Image (cartoon, one colour):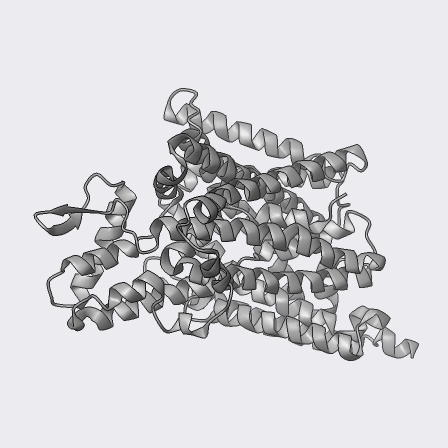
Length: 530
């Protein structure tokens, strides 16, 4: 029977990971391969620590944090996880719908009919899989097997493309790939790869502008990619996926091993393959964005609307910043920086593996990503409700609560409308705040004698754990509350991020004061025992 690692893979290998890996390959080529590997290593460290705390104490982490650390942190962790599930499930339906209609070519009538029928079919499939969780015996085995097959399918489909690029077409060498797994601080300050080469071809009076623009984009890609491969809802799912399986402290080593084999390896393989494919097709390659007329590059009117608008936006920003005419080299640079979507990627891969194979590979791979993520998001909804109300995990109430994930059925009404940006900003901001908050809470819980008792690590083991957790927590916190994190999140000029951060800090301080008063009134059970 599989453990928590495969469940984590089911959610982390979703549309967000795909989009992030695509843009990493577009901007940094294979030189940025290290980003998501490092991100997932930090994630494995924290999830392993969460598993250690859960299995050692044998108690609900939500209740431990609420009763022993700070109730505000516990409530915020739970509601941020639930909100993330209810909102981020919508783009997963949109991604799956796109794969079925655009890549696999299935249709059931009008556009509205397609959206309704396909969405209901996806929901039915995911619900059927989720209902097997907690059944024990055959039901649990079915759930685990389906999830393993889906995750394995995602990895295999993207590996197929990379194998052709590396070993048949030789577009990218293995030495370049291996070098890309070595981190470099210069990636935060200097343009890399084809972008750096193109920069030197530009007129001197515009080089400073483009250098700042490229470095800013690279920093955004690096920070967001490195910090948020693990979402706040993944931290909530981890302990309860273990508890529901009846694991105890004898399974602590197995939990770490399972996270490595079930989450780290599939994630690294899948995302690295996407980065390699994106680098081979887009890095330093304008693709269909430009067309040459009388020796002058212009926006290609035959390109997709997203490519045209993306390129025009970059050009408008440059012209507003520098009073100088655009030349061909600048047009080329702007085309290199377009943020590509899965549709553009599929079209570009047609030249690598052929039209039919490109659509089949991406259709199946993206559909698997969408279904696996929807399934796990529904499962986490059940965990959140059970913890808040004290229901049994895997029971009837849990199964009913998983149906909260039906909010995803509204994707073509909500996510495609103007409210999408508001929902994404609010949910993203809350996620930014509570991911490092969850890390800090578990770091405190890990070191709490009151909560862990004799199970708290000691000596070198405790030092190693604290160093690893400390590095991960600091990295996540800097990213979350830095210039690209929650603080600067806004909608229509309204600084929602600052309001959320300030409100949370005030609430957390109030929660800490409450805990101090409570501890003074309640003797430490460990101290009393001694």
